[in-house]
Image 1 (cartoon, helix red, strand yellow):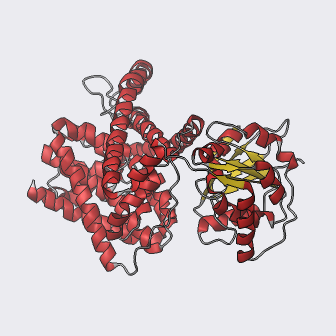
Image 2: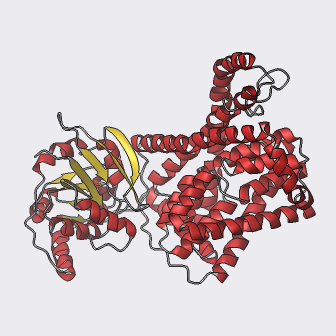
Length: 571
């Protein structure tokens, strides 16, 4: 049977992504389902000479949707040719409910009994032949992490068939499930493994908090170590040896005093180009996102992918739940915040996992004000850190205090209540290198697609404004706020303007202004909280609506005015 569209369907955390990465051969892309903000991944796979599309459908527990993701899963089912239903072998009873619903539909189905290795370690043995007889469709034992059974699963696709199972009521389904489990599953006693003991320790309040602090410390130490070494040993040498000679020749050709030189090359520093301070479209404009920011984004998404596939992030969500409730959110809101530390755009996209409008508004506002992206963090650490680590601590300490105060205020004055967290905690699993690398590549490609055009556009925009003396005009208008309220020189208006497009570039623009340490701390803090970059702003409009986003923006600007004034007074 030739198929054009294969759907991978199953409960959340059953290993669908691991199997997808094993089966998808090329053209792997992440898309939003039409008319929604729900993401799904699709790619091409190879079956002989045929190249069908394989889709990793959003995880769902039922075909009677209770969330937007489940609604999308049901809609996608209508357009599939074959369904590969992924089942977690260690949670057979729960997984079979969706399986029976799929078998009641008129669509060919094949079952992938996944994570059989983990099930055996837990003392669970399943008779695959008996399960196949009871369900009436092919069942293949697989392990997405090791690749075991994937070849057999692909070869078995032509044997997928429509089940003869008749529609049943909810109670009838559970009766059928009970009989199947009793018939095919055998449980044996065994002692808990080290990972299982670690799983329990990870969600207990005291030990879990200590483990979380250790994970966070090691993660950000690794991110900084990898990022700094990539910059120092790979990207800076490449720019200096390959790109600098080309730019110097272009500089001579354009003429140092020409308008085009100012726009494309920028200022010469002691007769040469400084990629960090020249601020030309082809110098700083390219070096900042590629040479300074990309290494940190690479290291962040590498560590994030490992933590995701390990299964640690849901445990962090459970630990953070009590704290998040005070801010009007539940524990899973920690995920957008963590993603926002890498780049605010995926952080903003992740807000969709929060179902209520109130939660989304609070999360969007707090993230935009208090969560700097890794690119901005790198610029702040590099620029302000030269003056002393205590000044970097002042900036991030201020942001953390703001997170708590703004969350408490929003929670108190916005109508509604924080929902309880309903999240499945998967067992710890060793990350699959192929899946981690594929996710890393897709995220890096998405970052460059989102970031690079805005950086170049921002540098071009500011250079044109500067050449036409328009920035000087705005500096005169905003001088009372910049100098009187915040204590910044009027030249800092350039950084504020570029901050609407790229905040990391904006922080970098504070460097050549010869600011005092106090001014540098105030400027960096204001640039973090006063407004999100334009890419994040557009995404947040899609997530929370333009009306709520304008309210959020008004809060941001008000907070920036107040915090800048307080820092100027205190420091």
